Image (tube, rainbow, N blue to C red; front, top):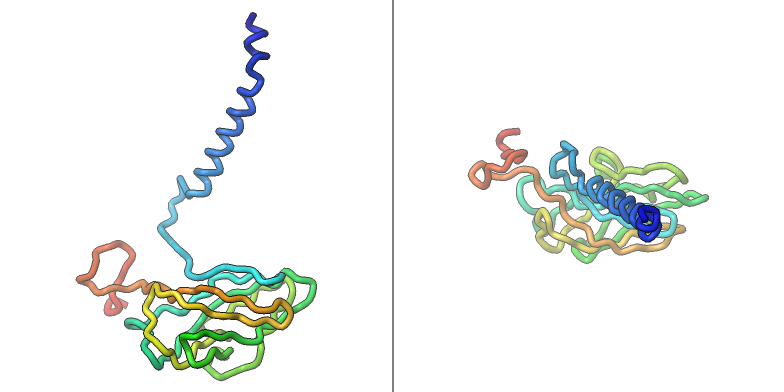
Length: 184
């Protein structure tokens, strides 16, 4: 009799395994047990052809919003998974007069080579994109469309945000981790 009960429910073991597995994945994905904070990396992520695009964002406004007429840095990482190198030829957006590829000192430069199998970071103090002569105010957290053009991979339009500032006025909040610009 015990044998018939055991064979009449052959699904019990696989179902239990599936439930435990799903819980493990869920807890791992939500970061349960991790001591990490509420870090939310900036930027849009996408893929165009073999080129991975990561952390695409407009730099954090320095002391308030980017104002009409300002030049705003645009940072992004690329990883080319293709068999051939590619090049970032340029970008465009409706929120700025132009988008230039510039060196760390702000001098306009040519296309950025994206070798196969290498991470290329367009960041502060390196080559990066610069949105010239903004046509509107952009605050931290605002989203804008930027189209990136590649020699081989083609074009992709991304909705990117202006990085949310890590500073606030002393009177604005007592949330941990936020500091006033005057405290720096």
